[in-house]
Amino acid sequence: MNDTKTDDLAGMSEEEKAMMAEWEKMSGDAPAGDPMSGAADVEDDGAARILNQDEIDSLLGFDDSGLGRGETSGVMALINSAMVNYERLPMLDIVFDRLVRLMSTSLRNLTSDNVEVSLDQVSTVRFGDYLNSIPLPALLSVYKAEEWDNSGLMVTDSALIYSIVDVLLGGRKGTPAIRVEGRPYTTIETKLVERMVGVSLSDLSSAFDPLSPVSFTLERMETNPRFATITQSGNACVLARLRVDMGDRGGRIEILIPYATLEPIRELLLQMFMGEKFGRDSIWETHLTQELYQTDVSLQAILGEITVPLRDLIHWKKGTQIILNTYVGDELELRCGHVPMFKGPVGQRLENLAVKIEKYIPPEEESRER
Image 1 (cartoon, rainbow, N blue to C red):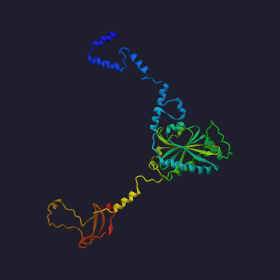
Image 2 (image 1 turned 180 degrees about the vertical axis):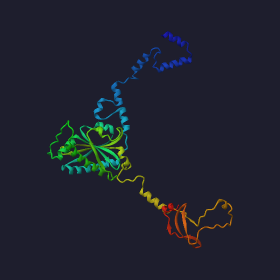
Image 3 (image 1 turned 60 degrees about the vertical axis):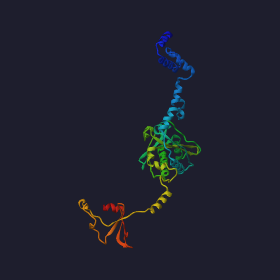
Image 4 (image 1 turned 60 degrees about the horizontal axis):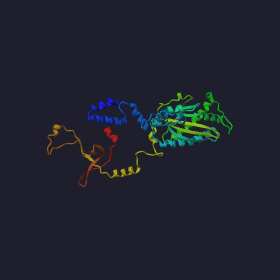
């Protein structure tokens, strides 16, 4: 092999020899006929290393050990963050704050018990991911926002369902509610939870009232998440998690509102405080008004108008007499540019012609006259 290489080099020009030397240098000074030698050198230097399966899974975010935490890492975290990228809505935090106070009072009146409602978290999720994460059994209440013409979802977990049934049916205080697993909810349990959901939706309507009046009405209640689909699985939604405590009993209520439902009031939710007016500055408005009052405006008094053919107009000379259809007692029209503004009789004051303004021409009247 070496003799053959020496013969080949002897037949090369100086340019080709320099190029060959450069290739060997780039490949790790490995002989051209021994490809394994260069790979071994690279491996010994640690410049290149093949990842094993666990490292690949960790890089892509498919690590099995992290499935229970509900958090992703690596490439999957970047994909999820891009798909659930949402704008912050400051007023939505105030709305849910009002909801907590209203629900605390309403549920106390409903149950005649000491009820404490707290807001655990307000976050954004994709609708499909949230449906897959709902712990069953649970009751899923689909409600509709009448004025916004869209829907939302309210999920009541199993612990709160049995607690509210126990409280409304006169269960003894200080004892946790008896939970019977493995059976569907009865009609009585569903109706009692429906009363609580109706009260909560009424409070949610009242919480949105300062921003935009809206009525949330219950459409149906489901136990299977597949039948509670209200939007595309990849659409972003706002999720509010509420904790309801009634002594030793309690549970969670989760309110899901798709961004498509909030779209009609998106500009209102972007406000930093209640009643903020976008694009308006009262100081600048006052200054602009004062300056406009001092602006000079040119008015033209129209003595009369006639229509003349072009063939007559070109024969006009100095001293040509033009007869207008205007009489001494007629009112003249004052215009600002091409817009009629006022009407009034003509007269004389200090050897000057004068017009007394007696009538204002509204824009509506002007359009009708035209």
